[in-house]
Image: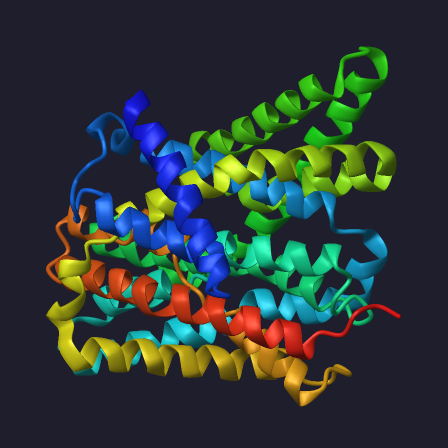
Length: 394
């Protein structure tokens, strides 16, 4: 396992630097490395790492979401409040519904199976979006209108919406009596409990830091451990109360920033250093989950479904931004930034197959195809468009 970790780090850094030299997002090099030497490629990685892949990816995701929360201030959130809320709901609902009906027709599968597929594909990837938006926030690009902050906030809600509705279709298939319409009401409750739980953890941590004088390095570890416990609480309380734990993780950082700005700046800088290692782990392990051999199995129908879904998502983003003072180019950037898929698709793409869903192999194949197509294209276009469209704060 130690040798595999060393190999991942060394080759990950090299791949990252090569892609940066090519003026491409560095994480793409790491993603492709995972595909190349992971279990579906050359298979150079120890199986023990792959067995804890989900936990390692979750820790890396927690780190980047804490960084995001530490960079979100209240003034900016007030400025982008309603557009961010619409961005959290509308694009995922529109894309998921459109993919559901199109897939049912083109692939000749049931609406329940197509619904699972639609809302697996509909989830946007925080792992791809968050690092780039944070870099734009640090450079104060798009800060006048709060565009990066709006996308950060919206993306955290987007995943909750997509995963909750997917879970309702899965529950309906499994015969649990869980109906899609009733699940829609769970989404606001999940968001509310996520925010409250994150705020409670954040306030508690600040109280502890006030009464116990510990070094900032230990504070970093305490915050990280608390955030990981919060994500564990979501699974623990799943059958009792819904909890959007990843949103709660961002709220922890947000509370620290609002109550102790100087501490938040210090914590953010240290998490940026930790992210160097976490980024390699996250994107390598996401890439390692991708079985590229499955990608060609759905043929042109699969490609058509994904691109129709992306078009529907873009329309949802455009509608969400109606009434704002964003220019057409800025709206176009938001559409591109809201297109990458990776984390959620890698995490739950195989769930229907494991449940015995007849179309489970098709669903997994399209989840893989969505990653292969949208993660590179979305990241590259977001990178290029952001540099050209987002203006630096005057």
